Each structure stands twice: as C-alpha cells, then as structure tokens.
Image (cartoon, rainbow, N blue to C red):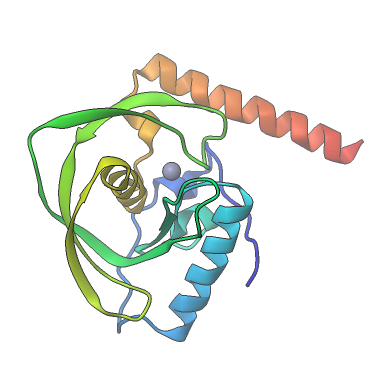
Length: 176
Ligand code: ZN
C-alpha cells in the first residue's frame, strides 16, 4: 500500500469524467483501492474518488466510522444512483481536493445505489444520512463535479483562491 498525492483545485484532472472499470474487480483495482484508503486515512478524510489521486476510474473508497470506533472501510466500483427521494437535507461538506473549505450543500436525503464491492459482489442498497451525502459527493467526482460547483461563482472563486494561496505557502515552506 502507498499514500498517493491528492489533486487539489484548480487541477484540470478533477474536471474529467471517469471511465467505468471493465472486467470486474481485479487485483489491480483492489491495489488501487488499498492505496486510496490509506491515502484517505492519512489525509484524514471520510471519502475519496480515484480521480482525486489522478486515476480517472469509477472507483470510490469511504469510511464513515466515528472517532474511537473500529475502522469500517467501504469500497465502490462502478457505482450508480438508481433512485433518489425528493426530500433534500443540508450538510456542511468539505473535500480533500478543496482543503479547508466547507459549505452547506442540499442533496436528496436518501438514494438507492448499486455498485460492486471489494470482492466484486453486486450490491444494491439505500443510503441515508451521512452515507447518502458522502456517496453523492464522491459520485459527483466521477462526473468531474466538485461540491464548490454548487456554490455561487463568487464563493467558488474564493474557495479556489484560498486553496491556491495555501498551496503557494506550502511550496515556499518546503523550499525554505
Ligand atoms: Zn470530494
């Protein structure tokens, strides 16, 4: 397993549409998911899409366990949203590709999803609460959409500027 670099805005790769994994869940895909999970835990974050480590594949990892609880990794290959309910719920979202920016986003409160798990089994289930928020946020990444894309232009630009500035600062510290 290895920790990968996480892309941050305005990296154009984050706008790419990811392609489906062909031929089921191979050892290569499992190795990618292992790397993604380790990268996500190190960040730390609760969800990560493959494009965030530069791989344009429809692969997501997630762990929604609380602090002090045992780890509960979840893996999603080729996930699809089959159904959503009309009712929405707000949640203050953040993203490892937009570090230190948080804003409230409304999304459907429940969604039915279908995906292949780590072992290649087809799973169909309803997601609600934080699970529903996180899977919809991560699936947006597969379409090249970031949560800041739902904000006003001004707020979005401010978010990107903030990340850029922080990255420049980090670069200077590393060079010094
Ligand atoms: Zn994200």
